[in-house]
Length: 514
Image (cartoon, rainbow, N blue to C red):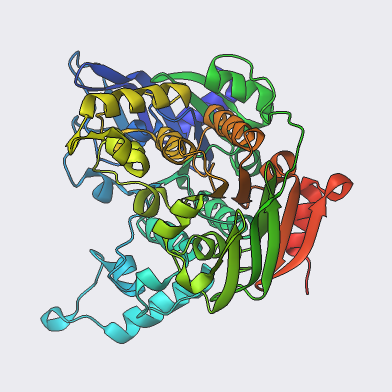
């Protein structure tokens, strides 16, 4: 054992040994060993469905590990933990987790979301509300969340909801001993300018002696903020190393089990006639937005948080109301006020929302029900639904879009995040829309699934769709798009194409004052 490993063991806050977990006949984890050390940020990488979520749910007390052969061990701050741990294990042990689905109660206030289960009472069980409000307001300010304690969480922008969930996790760490902070894709809902705040918080937590486990698909985050990295593949830890000794290519090979060829597909644009023409679109943030997209084009629209780009796809689709604007699809003109999602679909538009859990799919419904919904009428004959034909159609789509497992009857929520996304892309791509609006299509998606999604985008554009990609993934925009529109203060500030279109130029235009 080298000196780095010796130090990791000596400073271990928590250590897992021979951890396995099965769901029915399917073994998700198989003899996993993982050590998290105080003062270190440890990355956990792997494809969607590799076992990452199951492992962190065992760490945080949500799942109980299998222990049929009595070899599984969990050691916390040098003391063995009886397995399976009780329901209160994580809270009493000082293990705080922020899961990818952001455990925020929309109907509750910001204060209630932060303090629920943590209120301190004085005489006669009374709460000092003034002190609590002041403490919460101070924490919000320090963490850069633009909200008041009394504000409803439902009113917060998605980025601030993510920051609120992370802040709640930070407050669950013990002040008097090393704890464990688990962050599952904490930046998946954040634009790049919000990521720096999360990184600063992660470094602050590690500097206080806590162990941080960061689950991410972003290699730039791994190299920017972590000290060690473990790769899980098919339920087994396949690679462990110090981050400084790794290259991106080595990590991709460890994640996939083979070398990855080009991430972005090569394509030649053969732009045709204009199929989406937007004139004077004005919404809550967007002002006087004009742009057009031709058949076969991929056009990106981006900007920093609050710049307005995140509002546009929903205005175009009629899911939100604008104050003015007209939209033409394939030559058919609409005022924005008369558009609705149903009318937009009939006109030839499709929208993949960024919020996979609440707006894009129904987790409790089956994959079949989610995917076939836009084309369900195809499977009715004489008033009866031909379920076998529907199931066969969805099964074929799942295979073509590389969804794993390809079982149409599984609940959508049973799939990993990346496989949910591919299934939801299949839902809309099967319609062969003239205009495809994609809002952050690769958030929370592993490198292998990203390549599949990029190929889908290329194939749809090559088939003649006009694609508008709303994203803060600047590298993706630079490599996939024919043109990129940059927004600032609700308005178009720049349009990049040809030799001016590059990742660094997009970043510079987004950050520019004015």
